Amino acid sequence: MNMPRRIALISEHASPLADTGSVDAGGQNIYVAQVARCLAAQGCEVTVFTRRDSAALPARVRMCRGVRVVHVDAGPPRFVAKEMLLPHMPAFTRGVMDELARMGGCDVVHANFFMSGMVAQRIKEKMGIPYVMTFHALGLVRRAHQGATDAFPDSRIEIERMLVKEADLLIAECPQDERDLLQLYGADARKIRMVPCGFDAHEFSPMDRQRARALLGLDEKDFIVLQLGRMVQRKGIDNVIRALAHLPDSSSRASSRLMVVGGESADGAALCSQEFLRLQEVALECGVSDRVIFTGHRHRYELRAHYAAADVFVTTPWYEPFGITPLEAMACGIPVVASAVGGLAYTVVEGVTGYLVPPQDPQALAQCLQRLREHPGLAQAMGRCGLNRVRAQFTWEQVSRSLLGAYAEAMPGAPGLDAEVERFFPLGTAATAAPDRFAAFS
Image (cartoon, rainbow, N blue to C red; front, top):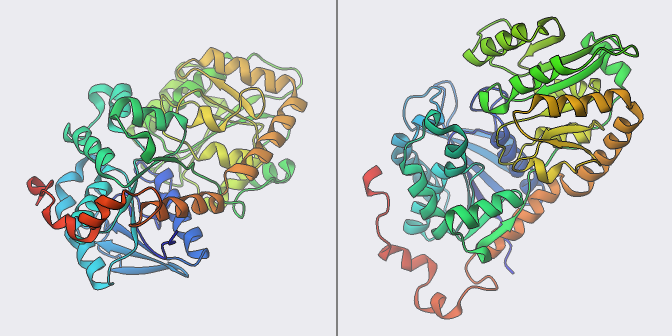
């Protein structure tokens, strides 16, 4: 099997150079950055294409050895919410194709999110380069949970269905993602490879809790619940606040406190988003505002201490395509209580590395938190099990090796490709007869 060496990662709205934690900067940014870094460490030449969202950004940036990031001009050079980016995809596509032509092409394209998939499909049709597709989130799933508040256009669903049919391989990040592709989109099971997200062992590892709390100014005796991630409504942070109100007083601990890490700025009181203000109101209504700590945005290098300082990490979103933060918490030796949805139901092992609870059920969450508070030995044992699990199965190095194998399968001449079809319609030439699927966006 020929192994690809020149790889293009397309991620239109999620730059690997972005500081994560804001509304549109989260797991996909981390995924693209870590996959690119690990592929380069295996000897690949990686080019990441993302949209220029600031006039100050240079055209090309060397992220690390073997990885360069190309900022493509498409729409105004400022932040644009991903829901509003579809009209700018024709310009983005032209910019990516021009750069690919200048660099002499590549062996395979890995598209991240449906709009990047549109670009990859056009590249395949015009340049004959195969592509692998990771959706990171599916429109039908999002719409089922968000309803009328979903601001993506209806055409997203049609585009995703086309990509499921046309992509050379589909990357499912967890069993639920695979089921959704099969049941909701009619995917061909033979084209699906399950490759999860990962964590960086250089960033996240166990740390002395007393030391971590001293760094953050937290009381050694308090029971600390940590919620960390983007501050958007579907993440269910209000559910965690309400669960805190259900926790009974404990004579063995000074207090139960919730530390909420995330937001648009480093100061939780500055640049308050609508969601931030709503959560403050929830805490006030529940009578726990004095026990909820909003830290605001924190840089990646600061997160290890926040995980290590906590007794338990909680994440209870309405839905979650995968969820990287539970892996990071487990890598720090912390038990996790999570919604039994999406990738969380795959990474968190019920009763072993933590607990799974229904989303939007603060009483069920409070019961799990109370159990861990009353039995610190159990919490420590779950933390150790979580640490062993992520080290064995979820490092970015393992993820990138699996992806590299998927890329090789997608390339022309890989085992399993129909030899007769390849002989009569070589991938590099049949594309010229392909219909212009995105004429409306040109």
